[in-house]
Length: 466
Length: 103
Image (tube, rainbow over all chains, first blue to last red; front, side, top):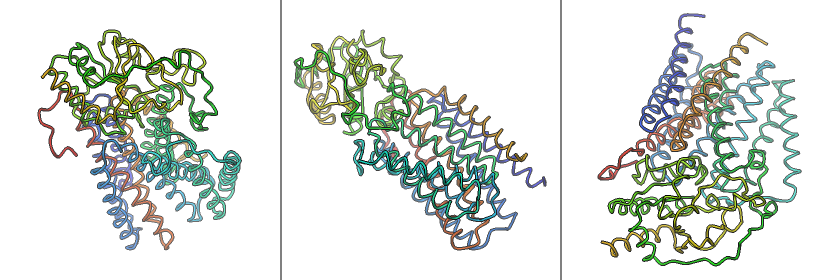
């Protein structure tokens, strides 16, 4: 190994270390920002080093440089614009888009290497895996982003013959991979694998419903990491292998956490179709009980004279973009001496930690955001639990056997002395079953859009108790 | 198996384990920034995009390099910027006046 190569390798090692340390600093909100900056610095160094390598080897053509600079500028511009302009409520879509481009780029690296025609059999293995995972991630993430953005229906899409199509695509994938391992220079195999993978990404994500998105996004994130690691194998680049493996591990952990928080297995989520009626067999005991509708003034008085209020936000809060209104109301209550905290279910929203980001945007200090295990014992001491846009994660039916959500960890909202639910109508949650919380005698239903409702409540608190 | 492949495989497996170890302690509050931060880290694919541009010598190769570079650059730049934007909002205490330019 020449001195130059050794130095390059050591610099890449330093970059990889900064990624590990950067992720480590994400263990606490106080250091997380520094962690991300450290990771970005490592990335900058890795890119700079690669430029030096290209200059040093002097292999790249002038056209190659033009292509690199043009592609880099366009991509960086698009990324910068998207990152600066995205609303916090649209974060899940953006993460999905970044997964898509990352996975797509990783797949293209293997395509380029294999199409070069001088790849050996080992590159056939890692290269075909790279194309498979990268291409599935690309189309899968595009479909996921489309669902999150509402361009594609968030409901599970199932069509006749879907299963057969998946079997055919699965066979195509297997055939493409095996063929490429036997003959890494086969263009036909490359095209077959590419097309089958792209199609499979679409058919994989289409049948998955909106509320399962936290799992899907985490899974696609893990896929992208793995694809990048495979691309590292193909190109013999250690820093890509390390970075890809780190992301694969983080995505894997999040996927598992999210699936556990819904008490569902990852395969069951991928098969999809939840909430379409074919898998929901749970009858709800005590259903048909009467509900109690309350007025804004009632709610305002209850809130203003409470000593402890726990707020339970859900996807409805994000959909209505009402995080600032909620923070405003909470602020007002706190100024009156009410103790306010937020109970965050792990799968509230459309991506892991979605509610935390929205509330952080609305200036809610993070110590007020409490995780499920931590806050559940406190509900019995709360005067009011205020549920906004959360449904299935508050349904006590999860504690009984025989319902669609049985076994799912829930927030013990029903233990609070009284419960207020802000909701537009009596519509069902994602699981498609009645929420027994709504018929609880302690529960008052305040029928309103989250944003308008919270504004009304804030004004009511101000006028009533000044 | 070649020596290089065994070396790469070792690095891959150990990195996975390091990843599990480091990330399993991240609190739920930070799950979105963690994911977004991990997202920017897989932007390392930009290095690969640069390396394949060096071997491109025909139109097909240039097109692949161009698309890969554009995708990867979007990933890496957008990922880090949006993660930073998110993380700066996480505060232990409320600030008196929300800054107008909080993006």
